[in-house]
Image 1 (cartoon, protein in one colour):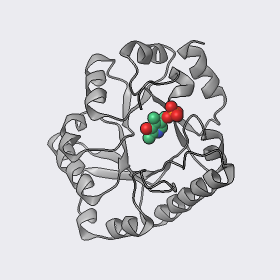
Image 2 (cartoon, rainbow, N blue to C red):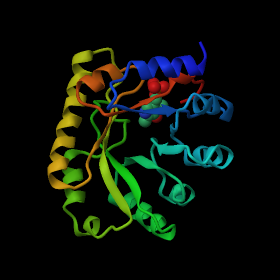
Image 3 (tube, rainbow, N blue to C red):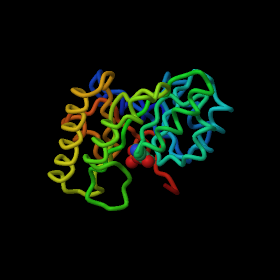
Image 4 (cartoon, protein in one colour):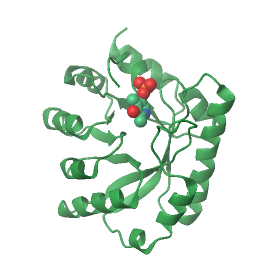
Length: 219
Ligand SMILES: *Cc1c(COP(=O)(O)O)cnc(C)c1O
């Protein structure tokens, strides 16, 4: 099936209020253009260098989402153009994003990545760490970042009960953050394998790669 058909099928399966980030990591510019020509504008990448090269080569009205783990020394490359950083997992990273955004006279939208999976390997903040950041003076003075929500990845398992529980936990953090901070409106959860569950648990932004672009060789 073509990328256009896959994209249309995925879109048809989403409620209107759920935003779709088409995850194009490892895929060539031609694949992104196919989705672009079908009218799609939000794309997600997990490596800053790759995203920057694609941004340079592709139409400028694409919204680039950084969905991967962010290395602080590379923030400067995406600062001019990134639309949303999903993977903020430390105050230091947030301070660097703020600093680089300031150089470009802009504010960068960010999500706190929360650790919700059982697996140790997945990145993200614990609830206590999140609270510590949000209540700190260092956080409050940042003028060039805007926290607009949270992101999380569930455990890679066929155990639906487990996955649902993790998504519900992230939703509860999202709800609580909404009480504490202004502008909290994005709950980024759900990938090709689990987005139906994520949406049932309250997701309003899904990040879908392989169901649109086909399987990847590398991750
Ligand atoms: C790769 C990736 C996705 C998309 O995964 P698929 O299973 O291909 O849909 C979503 N979120 C993050 C953070 C990713 O790294």
